[in-house]
Amino acid sequence: MRRRKVLKTAIFICLLVGIIGVIGIFGINAYVKRTVSYKINSVEEVAGLEQIDCILVLGCQVKENGTPSLMLRDRLNKGVELYYADVAPKLLMSGDHGSRQYDEVGTMKQYAVDSGIASEDIFMDHAGFSTYESLCRAKEVFDAKRIVIVTQEYHLYRALYIAEGLGLEAYGVAADGQTYAGQSMRDFREILARVKDFGTTMLKPEPTYLGEVISISGNGDLTND
Image 1 (cartoon, rainbow, N blue to C red):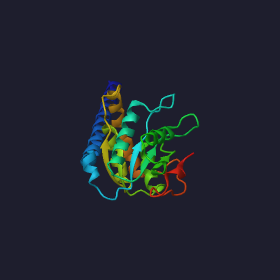
Image 2 (image 1 turned 30 degrees about the horizontal axis):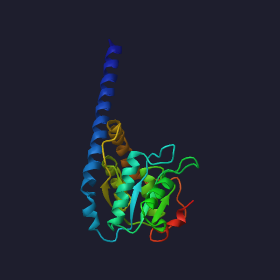
Image 3 (image 1 turned 180 degrees about the horizontal axis):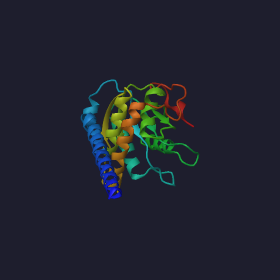
Image 4 (image 1 turned 90 degrees about the horizontal axis):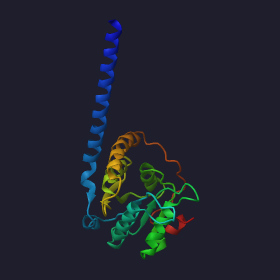
């Protein structure tokens, strides 16, 4: 009888902890989205802002043949559109270039150059290994203070929340050009990522790499390989 009572108590405690955990996850997710939703703007709205240092395009998958994935291409097209709308004089391409075999930022810069943008106006952050690191390095390495972030809307909430936590004045423009395969799973994973970066933004760990300051107001070719 006593064992049964202990077992019931243990099950009750586990269920209670689980329920609290679920409430916490969805509560933090809602808080993150609600806190920064007003910072998601249209191209026309951000074009009216003044003294924006750069347009930060967040990287994602590059195909094996070296071309941007569908999501990345939409981000790049939106970044190029913002540049030509005179939102900012510089583009900052931030992504994963952790090996010679995989280079998100090189692909991103080449795409912008092929769109007619001068190479010196395009900076590459080779160590943007995560959303947090991309934002942290935009501030600490590239000395950016006011930025416009470009990525898909589901990702913008987290990016803007991190930027706010790091003391960056940031605005977002969504690059949702179409419906993407696997988006439901991506949306679910993003809920967990928002919770993770809610904590990361409080702790403020240093990114994998920092290095010397390369001012975003200078020449982007300084960041070429």
